[in-house]
Amino acid sequence: MDDLKYALLVEVLGRWEADIIENFLRAEEIDVVLIQQSLSDLFTPTFAPVKIYVAKEDLALAKELLETYNANAK
Image (cartoon, rainbow, N blue to C red; front, side):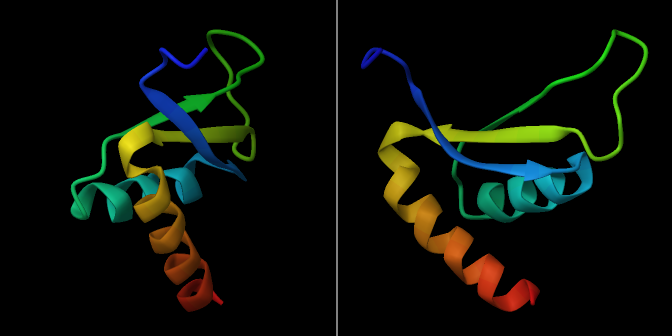
């Protein structure tokens, strides 16, 4: 498992929020991968859980940036 390049940063409800976080992290040059569960190939609910993964070497910085994002999103 340690050979994996990415680590889970957070899971959010809704692709829209995941896209905002992804763009926020990419602006800081952090590599991001989104994984969203769907019910079928044709249907993905609006508020389906989305897991946001970042490169392991960027995990600490991504956590700090996520805290900043969450503090300013309220």
